[in-house]
Image (cartoon, rainbow, N blue to C red; front, side):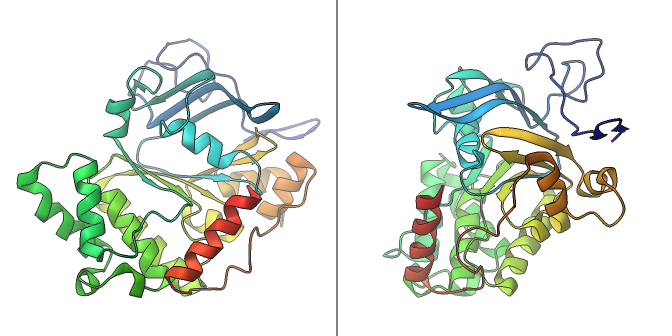
Length: 305
């Protein structure tokens, strides 16, 4: 990270199209080495007249925990939905482990585990039934299905509660159940959209402990959106700051702070690059709650962007 006459570098550079080589040293994938976990080039998306994502260029390296930070409405969730094939690509490129999202949707989906903001667990099913349903949806072979369901529940610490209805779970348990659903297919890239929203500090810590253990054990890549600065600083190898649909800075948290100056915080970095105040988002973030409370919290978050 360099500091120029106008202030700290933002770590942003425009790379070649995903999969094409170049002699320029841009810091972005040039096709000469193994493809990154995710490659985004010139990615833009409009909802009618609203430009939600604006010319985003980004690489997520294999094996890292990468954080996409920004306030509600920054464009984080839209970017995630484009990457996970849930929205069509309008302009630009998205590749996942070298596969073109536009051309190879099914191949890309087999590489992904996705935990959305929206509640994805069914209150009327047990934990085991929820995970088994996702195993079937992700086409886990029948001969391996029971073992992989058990493994996912065990990894998330839910074995003892597996045969209880999800409606009896706490907020933290629901999030771990949703992680188990995403992990049952053993994805190479785990995408988490605001994974700890509405959870109390203890539940937040537990979710991240499980994610980091998985990453260490399997080498899995993790892409996470969050508006919690402390979470990004503690858990992410690199982060991108997003505001009004555009990336404002990319780098390791320590590098971004050091480039701004001694004693700088991530919030100060965000203000520097966006001229805006980075809020803590929806709610007080201190509610563990139950199934009904989690549903309410996430509905509020979706309404705010």
